[in-house]
Image (tube, rainbow, N blue to C red):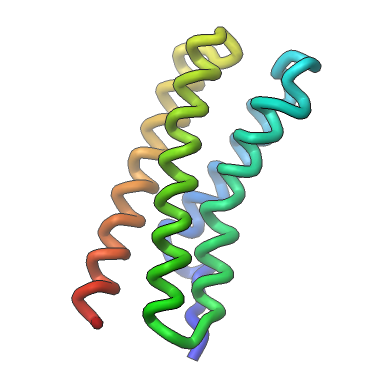
Length: 120
């Protein structure tokens, strides 16, 4: 039976963060439109998209695989935020807020993965 991923707290937070990433990156330099802006957005929306896709799968092992991919995407976002901050595309406050939220998402995803491994 497919899961209702939209009810998962980690999905809801990840979705809210995608919206925040889109809002924040709209002011990035135009020369980054097809570079860092695009990559950061893709990594950000990959987190909830993989949860949705994995949740639609019937097998636990498939769901774990998609959660694992979401964990990797979350780690990508964390590095990309650091790079954006170092390049002065993000204010200290935006960097702190976004980073803290993605660290929380990463912890939630790892807890979810541990739960899925126990259910094996």
